[in-house]
Length: 83
Image (cartoon, one colour):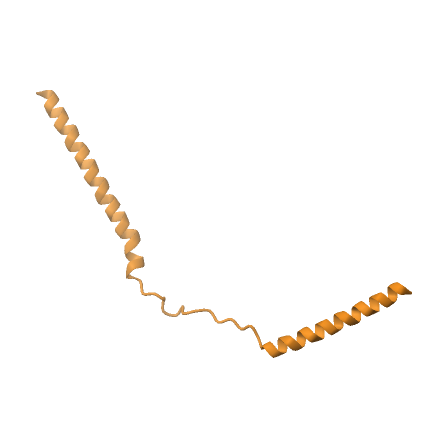
């Protein structure tokens, strides 16, 4: 009869362990998954980031000036190397 009690005790202990593990895992899932599910998206005040790339016409003019300056520099360097 002692064996029967021992088996039922270990059985109940094992069932208790399974139930406790399940409940704890369920609680952890609720803790980690509940806040993102209840949050309003997009967050108010964070709608986006404004980026200013500048004026396209100004950029083209600057590029032309830079290319002219580079051409002048190259001509001057070539003349120095030839002499």
